[in-house]
Length: 118
Image 1 (cartoon, helix red, strand yellow):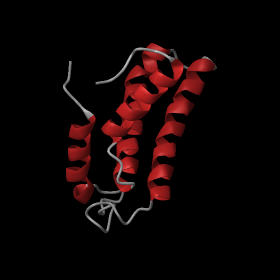
Image 2 (cartoon, one colour; image 1 turned 135 degrees about the vertical axis):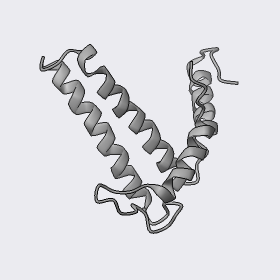
Image 3 (spheres, helix red, strand yellow; image 1 turned 180 degrees about the vertical axis):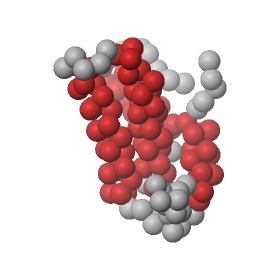
Image 4 (cartoon, one colour; image 1 turned 45 degrees about the vertical axis):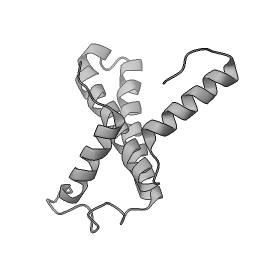
């Protein structure tokens, strides 16, 4: 098992932002921390990845491909969602790991379920 956690993802995203290039080979961000993109820009990027994932699954559902055939592409798209979700959280100054723990535990409490993230 790979030892990835959300704090490690944030560190890697932060380190990669000033180096990230667009399809033309140009730096994608004027500000090294990505702050030249608004929260809406990051949300649009995230939704683009969600849309790409949905399109793959649509093609499985209608019979174009089976799940095993597209699994490598699906893994990549789901990973892109996680990466852009963290970048959106970073732009909003949200500690994604801490927020997920709080939200998960609050929902468990609300539903009377003893499962918690410690």
